[in-house]
Length: 192
Image (cartoon, rainbow, N blue to C red; front, side, top):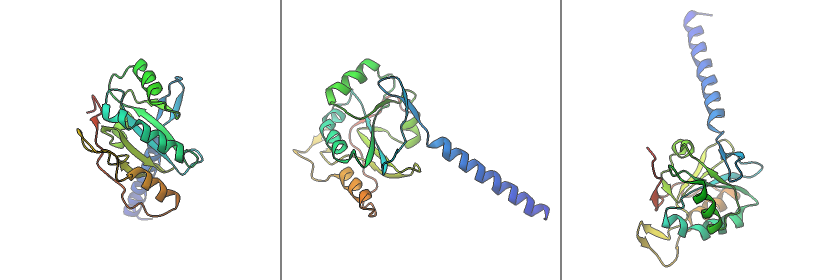
């Protein structure tokens, strides 16, 4: 074995080990739930994918999407794992609890206090949805639907249902027609 080949083999081996290690590290984000117990936010479980809703008790737009998020979660709960994520800097536990009650959320609510998950996934807005497969690959990111065309431009009702369409396409193993849309809402506070 030549020295050049040995060095190349060693470099490739280190790169593969590094990729494997970072992949395993990237797919585990344990965040505390309302009961204080940690839960891996990216764990698909025995479902097709995990759906993350980034929400805020301080964002009226996010709050207005509560019924749509709950409706989607109820419709697809058997096939997907749903987590509601609070990533606002300094959000109080009391506010998270009141918000959960106000929105009648039935799925796990997780507190991303250090904003590590939001930063890792590039989430910046509430509400924003990110759907990931079991390998941590983003299948869809963006808005829930087009109820809001801008921060203060609300339609009477949504005309496109981007998230619902993406989830339906995932279930039917079709190529997702639209994998990314622009979320409309409030910036996740304190995110740098």
